[in-house]
Length: 139
Image 1 (cartoon, one colour):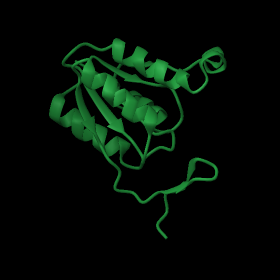
Image 2 (spheres, rainbow, N blue to C red; image 1 turned 45 degrees about the vertical axis):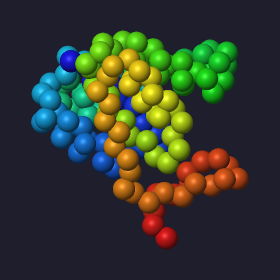
Image 3 (cartoon, rainbow, N blue to C red; image 1 turned 180 degrees about the vertical axis):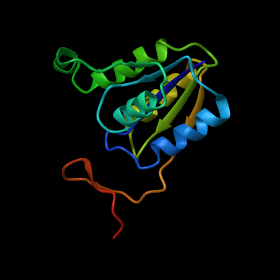
């Protein structure tokens, strides 16, 4: 069984803990697949390396960003899901809206993957002017 990990580019403090819990429950995956971006993708890659698990990163290339714009991340998510088989697992770590992560969950569910969505318990603040999360700290 393969494990696909998707999540916010802002990173989350619970990634290693949740992935360790998944590992304890399901055993070693044949492959960990991550998107190669900052945040949860890099945390998942670091976790896989630290656990001695086989890893495949699927980054979006510069020319893909240029040619596809914001659609490049969604196209990469589709590629990652297509690397999986029905019955493989996705662990997703969205933060707030996280359209890329939630889109990956939709693709994974449609492809027959067991999909675990770990919603955040951390406070976050969305800046509507800059369209980004500016803080994970409480008031």
